Figure: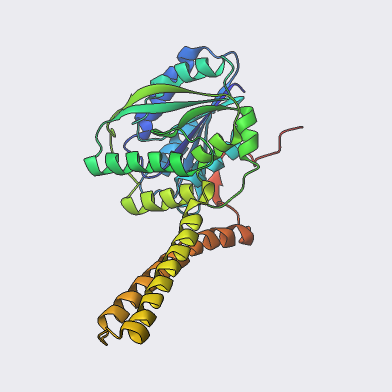
Length: 316
């Protein structure tokens, strides 16, 4: 099989028919020498997305779908699609039509030039609030500065990857997925294609600010130890300041005898030290929570219904 297209779906009944039609038309125009497949992963949608996927699968044997037992998250849905993908090249694209399917021929052509990964880089982001654009810009640049690998800025999961990269991703079973970071960590020759991201065609985004914060924490904790180092350095810095204050207190008490008893300075010192300690404990707790999730070794997802076969290992 030449090409697999992985599409995570969460409450996208308004976009699925148009997405399928555009994907089908684009890929058929590419005149691939081999076959192709569409893998839709229904991530616990509560609208009619699953019914539409069943209908598409009954009409087109190239349509595969997986239905999760509940909502496991966007990154896990992409992972499930990659687990079932059989193509020599795999495209990851969201179902909201903000990423144009018409870009697939250019991505595929660039992959044929010797790249193992070709990611789509956003020149602009239409239909998003100023706050979301600002927070996304800050996050991508902060992540690029504090991680030890080169994660491209202004890129999402919209990309095409080779079979080599898919097999490498299957060897990375951590619970808190950050796929674009994992792909950067894998390496190989990677290129980009710039495009303008359009406004969502229908429905509402499933990425709330709460999910965005959680996603940012997954990315930072998965690929950077800097927060732990900051906690350690802050601890030493605060301890140094506290030691100097202690020396000054002893000097004022026993040498100059110029002091005023009171609770203000004591309370300020206690609150300051307590705040730094709580921040440090919270940062450490984030890392421990992720270690604990991986130690349990629970499955990443549970499939309730599918028309695909179970994932099999590729021959060595």
